[in-house]
Length: 438
Image (cartoon, rainbow, N blue to C red):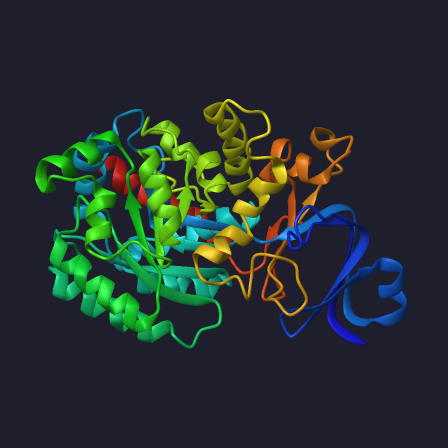
């Protein structure tokens, strides 16, 4: 048997089936797909490979899936901190966006974000921002897997002037990337408070026709609930349900303001949730009751949100925060064990995006999206349980190798497709411009 690449590792954590750790195993990759997962001794005897990589102290996991990002906002990192969400948006972020958003801003911010994500083990991200076509082009350039949010919001922007314009550009975006293996597009109405009924009904119809997910901020803050009750006489989830938007294709992000009956109804709808614990903590938005959602059978994925409100795109750190916060909110040490949190960051994200047949686990036949984490560091020794060490102890500096579709995007900690000197120069130029504004 031949393979393009054969990777030997101390541990392989396939995620599917759950709670499984393979020791001294190897992964064979041919034409970007995983073709075999077998003990290293057998692999050495049975497989001839064009390239063999030995990782004797590493764990291989599925590439991490960041299920909610605003990648270009990496250029706003640290620009406005320690203030409430609506003040942060209305007085700082939205004015900055009105002044600076352009294809150039989006390209440079997306490239900065992708470099950070690759270096921290993320292979796929679900984005929501203006000029998603530019983010898609940068994703093709960097080799990352990207799901582009076809943004919709009631107010005009540099991307579109009204609902007709947003939806027209959305459909063009979908057509542009429909034949790409690593980049696709889904609907992304911003939030119930920023998109009115008629555009949401149009999104529902189009999403059903094209069989695409709908990615949306929902029940993020108490203020959002209050606004909805005042304007519509009901809570946002009730309104979305009446509009026909709750269902298996809804990806509801944040969900920090939930009542028991809403959890039950949302579980029955088959919708997904993306938990963004660090952003919610930083903006004091509230606590997503993750343990209750999982117990109700809801698929919960994990995201960082944008670097302007996190302030990083580190999914390893997000896993640790999710695990610790989940126990504190539930008042239960058994809530959100390490294996479940790793599933949230991998296969659950793939399910939310409708990509579970292709990514999210190290399974023969799936795309070779793989992250290698060096557990030989002082900070992760000794290793009694590699999954526990990854979730509770490992830092992103221990990510050594990252593959997407079998291509090595990070090799021994070095980016293979991104010019770091150019990246830093472009980022410095934007910092100078943004500081002049403030």
